[in-house]
Length: 116
Image (cartoon, rainbow, N blue to C red; front, side):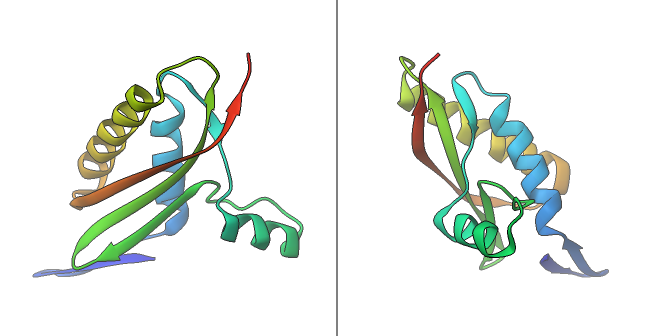
């Protein structure tokens, strides 16, 4: 759960909600072939023998702002820098618009390249 204290109380949003929101936003960007499990998520999936619901996404609350880590696979032959810029802008806008929480950083890790 990611929580923030406001004058009206505490607002908490689940990790799964963020994973679905961010995963959908990143997957819609041109050149993204899919989401990849982070090393921690991959280990957890192998131990539990099921896919992680937060595949490829990790959200942390640092000093009242969110830090988002995204692990993706890209399509072969596309400009990776352009894809990453597109993802950063789209994810930041989507999270801030949907939740009202400020996003400090969006870290995009390109873990694989798929030929199509």
